[in-house]
Length: 179
Image (tube, rainbow, N blue to C red; front, side):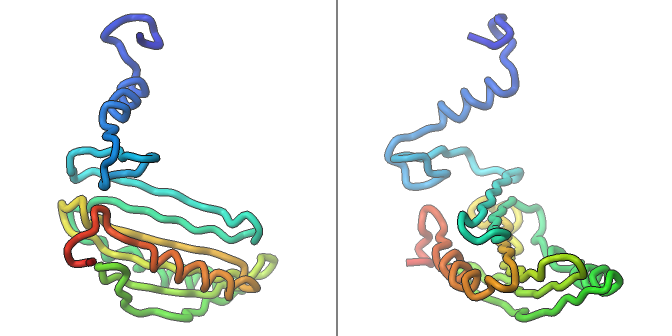
């Protein structure tokens, strides 16, 4: 059955839903988890997934997780930090780099950065990021960007949550290197 009533003229949404339902494999341990199973797809070079969460008790605390397969490692993600600092300073604010180093998360070496931003008429915030540049044409090691933002007053809570998030990152299926 199609939404427009004509066989063979499925909408893009119908095709997508059919493909997702056909890809469901009960009891699988790889792919995107859906209950007791997963949705799998053939490895590709054009995959993107992202999700964001708001803390239900701390107003203004958000965490974002984004992945994308890459043709070349994404080494430009932090290239605009100097530009961001200039914009904040030009508007009477201040951007301070609290931490900037390489950090191993699971089996992936990425860049962790923590900054503090104060701007007139805005709540001071902290932003934590961890970025893995990705391996070209390898959907098992895509670019990964994890970002968390919170009011500066809630920095300690964010630090606890951040460490939990980074420690929970695991490749699926777990690679032999991670075991």
